Image (cartoon, rainbow, N blue to C red; front, top):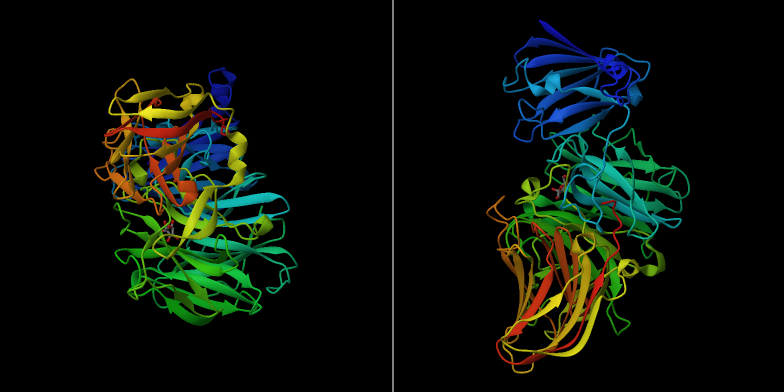
Length: 607
Ligand code: FRU
């Protein structure tokens, strides 16, 4: 046995590390793959050294000698990529020890994960990353995937998300929590649901129980989520403080099937006066519908989707809601259904179905040939797990998506955190020239509040084969919005190139005859981290007219393009070494940019 002490307080006395707390860390090595870390004192966080190349160690949290939970951490052997905080405050007055099993026996006593352990009173979350978005939601640190359980109540938009607090790769699924008065400025709060005896906390939804149907109290916030371990079962939790803390239901699970099922999404149906729940049945590529009167006992109603739409991947993260079709009183139901892989440009993507729903069965619209058309919410490569806020004000249907793709999400060139959410967006429906009803997606109106006065505004600019260059803002890493309308006249192809001095560029092309807008990020910046990142994604313009309007939102590592007032959207990550400073426009034959404006955007995330 070998023992090592870290006298944080002693170092603090010497003035070497003034931030260190009065604590000691003692490490005992039992065998090559098993060590015990004892922490004593008043410090707030034990910092664990992480190396992403390491395999996961099981860290068994022992409180007064009893196992409380196990977390999985990629403890560093040599180089340390970053530190993650283990919160010591819940264990005040108790004996805390971490029984660490490094499964593959690679860890030795000289590893950095032992020598670099530290106890501190503050965990520094100051941004250290040049690619961290300046106006999109990101977790302060750690990995994030799907948005979860969003609801609006008493003037606050709540956003939970799949979070790993102990590293920037997927693991330890927890519901992280942020709230916002305006969908734009987000405040991070303590996590609300952490892995428990039934498993990790996978995706799910929340709704307000206005009539106290579940018996936890009027206006209680109810969460339904997947408990994922050996099986995937559906669990309930409730909150009586507007979503800042949740109590897990002791009778969990409330719904279990003999096959994999996840991501429950539920809502109150005023027509049937019942709660309806949509559940992904991933391996069967379908969604299951259940109903309940008390949110605890769920009765199967129907299944939707086998053989319909895109099928080449697991179906996940459903949502179901009603919307008005623009310009009419007609109402249609929309079933959202994320698929991975099987997206149009590889990996994950969000598809949807438009149809009717009678409280039991969803019936999709068919095209003239009797087929159910495949529809995509976004034609970029980084838009997944899209779901909507429940109880949004003024009948709005506001959504947000995880802005990444399972093909490469855990290797994108960030470390302190991984993944951002898309801009919040509002949905409506429109009828396209093919007679089908599609989703129209616009940035939520709140986004306008961060778009500044245009730094450039032009009208009727003649475009030809000689590129016409427009300067982009340089403040705040060049984050900006660009609005333009192109009248192609006789041109068959119009090309818009965003570029920086280092020769990195994104090329957006308009193929007028094919009515397609493509987004080429092959030379956009750092692309080598994964072979599937370099791609050209393409969107149909879904319009009768050749005149094309485009609205770009450019953040440090993403570009969202809303086309033809939201008839199509392209959301793509890009990692330019320096911001794009120029937009050049050219066309094969003469055409016209009827209007263009470039506006700086005000950052909402501390730089
Ligand atoms: C979708 C998903 C969900 C699951 C969650 C786990 O991205 O696979 O189906 O609940 O991620 O983190």
